[in-house]
Length: 150
Image (cartoon, rainbow, N blue to C red; front, side, top):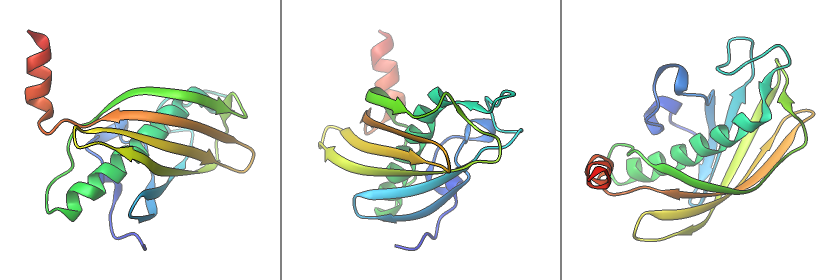
């Protein structure tokens, strides 16, 4: 489906921690986003952005998908948590300055409890990364966090 949302409409990150450049398109169980790597990118170094940051790009794309699901119910995006990543593999150590990365995430499993799993891939001109992310989105993140502090 053609995109009608800005990143800020779907992802609860703000300021410099909002790393996605744009939402490209989406469907019922997938979303595609873009990250433009520039000298001003958060985490940018002389060689580019370390490839390990690709995990956060993938996670924020999953957050955009979750935000899209909330918007479709007439609600606002909620806070979620990255529980883990399996088999994160990157073809490079750095995403070079000037690179445009396209991130594709596909829902593998979603439980009523808020647990989910996504297959993810990131592709640029000379780079590629893949992973399977496990996530958790509680109904009320604030209550959940308070309950775990006791």
